[in-house]
Length: 532
Ligand code: ADP
Ligand code: MG
Image (cartoon, rainbow, N blue to C red; front, top):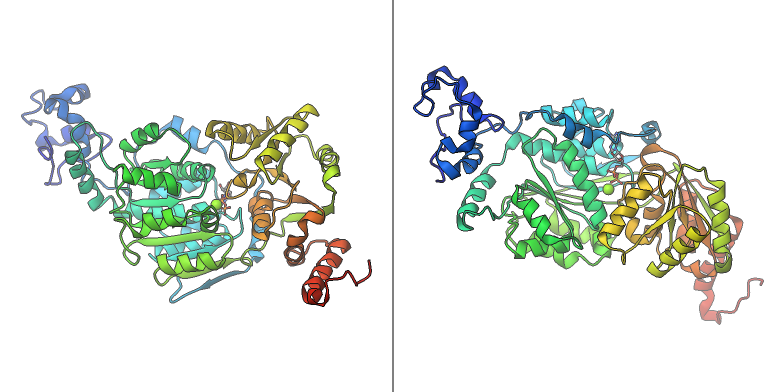
């Protein structure tokens, strides 16, 4: 069956949407032996198998060989509604214009000031209009032309600065221009190898790796928007959810794959995914992936399988921070890359008002209630705690006190976590108690207040957590409860507050000073000689 109907003559066989219509529309084909009724055969006759019985569903795919991926496919009003209903709220990018951006590397492409400054094609431009993005954010201004120029990229940017679209727009635009290439042929022979039941190995053209299921889902949703009216089918795979269902979805076609590392390795080992033609690799929240211990899986995916090597594929890494381990990964995965730093690497946004208050453990709950009561009814508050148990306990407490709240942490099932996020986002439960798992990458708009009920022990985690508010130019508030147990973060916290031009409590300053002294003078006996 395969190849019988391959059309190499450039005739009217190759439009996906309506192969039949374009075929009969051609006067020279109108009298074809297949259609003796003069080209008026109903579409149904072709669909029922007029061209050779059961093979015809395959035939439609075969016929896609030389179709033009840069042309939009038919609009679908219902899907359009679904994808673009969300809209953007209260975005104020003007605040972003003063953010310093630094791009370093050989022959760095010039940045753009508007989406129109770079040729991204019809599909992308109309989807940008549908999302109502009027202008690129700073990271987008720089990253888009860099990626369009086929350069590797290491980008550090504040949370909420629009990194997702910064890579999705140019990568998808490239795919639309270039079409499926060899991947399509591989797909077909994969089909033959695996029998005729459609259990075919998929060869995505682009791969986005993300640390958590929530983030992977979010990137996938964004990808669906920018893939609207294109021939690219985005898929997502992540752990903790039914693998059978994910496999079935992959089998319907996968050109852009968003994945968490563990689940992807599983899919590769089951022969469901081949990375042989994956010419675009994106590592989002790379720092977080390493923190979560994914480095072996990432290296397995990128270096020890069939993915094209660096220099052949194009690789983009995104991270809010740039610690040593990320620098090493960048050196190993990227080729002559451009380094992009938006704002100070690892710093927080001035859009966020940061408050640090001294609260003993025993007073935390009542202090929290005061804060919640002072917050407007309709605004979302995200409360971070250190442990899963702590999250459950605090949720119970708030519930008993009559607050509509929910929680998200590692022990809750995937379904519960998604449900909780949904309840929170929609405002039905405007208070979300979370452990660090929720801290990174989640784009929850309208979070007005982030409360560190328990402060984290490292400053990078702090930066990520408070980055859940003040997103994309909106103003936000972050309040952190501090006491004796948080000594280890004192100095870094002070630096961050000063850096972001925040008010610094005097007790924090003197604590930081004491810590400094303790470190410098501990060899003299470590006595508390400075005054208390
Ligand atoms: P980051 O990954 O940097 O933390 P995201 O990519 O999650 O940020 O983007 C944050 C929010 O900003 C999302 O809701 C996204 O839809 C929105 N956004 C991104 N780019 C633009 C833009 N150019 N104009 C308006 N909104 C944007
Ligand atoms: Mg992100």
